[in-house]
Length: 71
Image (cartoon, rainbow, N blue to C red; front, side, top):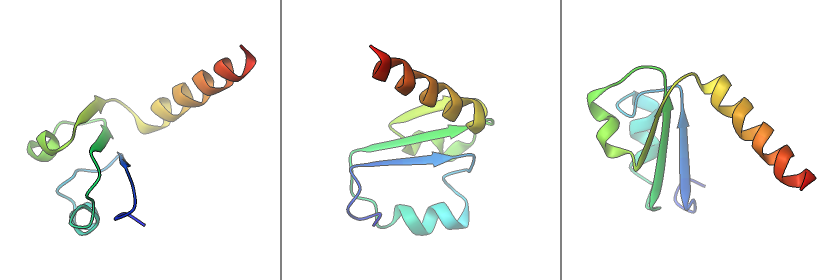
């Protein structure tokens, strides 16, 4: 499934973590988004970096989706 993805969102993990490393070797998409509360040297691999808590990021995305659906 990772190979088929256009966008990959990594929440709350370093791109250098073992699991991310395994997944990233299969990712060929063009938009790697990282959401993490701490900086790491491997962050530069991401196309978009958001420093903050993953739960708050997801809450904000959900609120924005609900807002757009009401308009």
